[in-house]
Amino acid sequence: MLDDEANYRCEITYEETGRWFKHSCLSPQVTRLAVLGRPTFVDVSMENGTRVDNNGVVGPFTEGSLLVLRCKSGGGRPIPEVRAFKDYYSMEIA
Image (cartoon, rainbow, N blue to C red; front, side):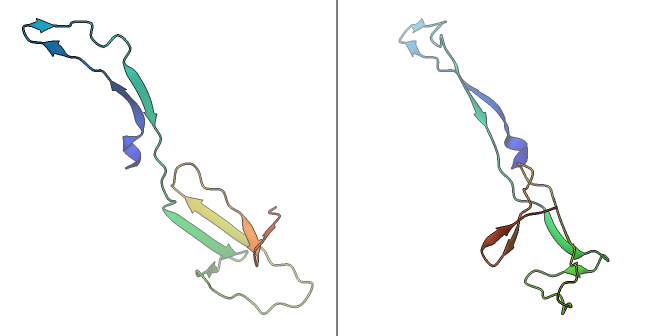
């Protein structure tokens, strides 16, 4: 759970029969737990607001015309990075 992200401290104490070691943990260990989370939503839409479904098809378009797609995502940790691909090649995003 994302709420589990925090610093956790571990202290070890021990005792011998009849004797308690008050300072048995001279150097407690502190660990930072980082939790990664998937985005809660990913939304792709055309410039006019029409939503594009996952694996959806847009077009046809006239050669040379401009196509604007808007990509949004929300939630997630760390903040999601949006990238565009044509086939398997990364495209520049404006």
